[in-house]
Length: 89
Image 1: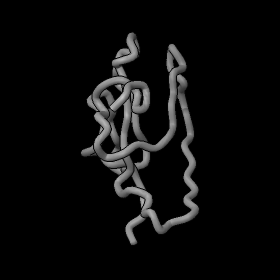
Image 2: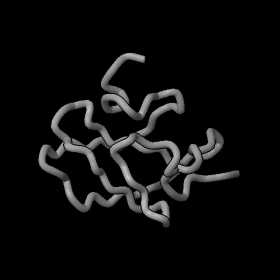
Image 3: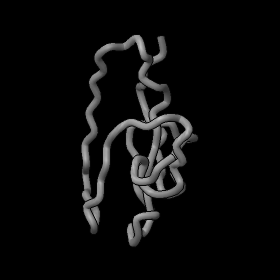
Image 4: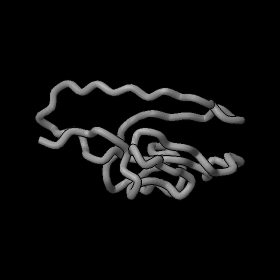
């Protein structure tokens, strides 16, 4: 069973940069509108048979507008638009 262990550098919004470890993500957008979003998925989804999964995220800099969302989304959600969950699919 493959569990999430890092961020997926190939499944992210255009405003994000992932370091070589896959554990650190930097936002490089302007953050001037609700479409300047940085969203990323993990390298593997949490398997349905995994009844409990724990993860941590450290926010090093909250940015100018302090808009941060942490959560889960389906593979079909576009990461280059507004924040996942803000619009009907």
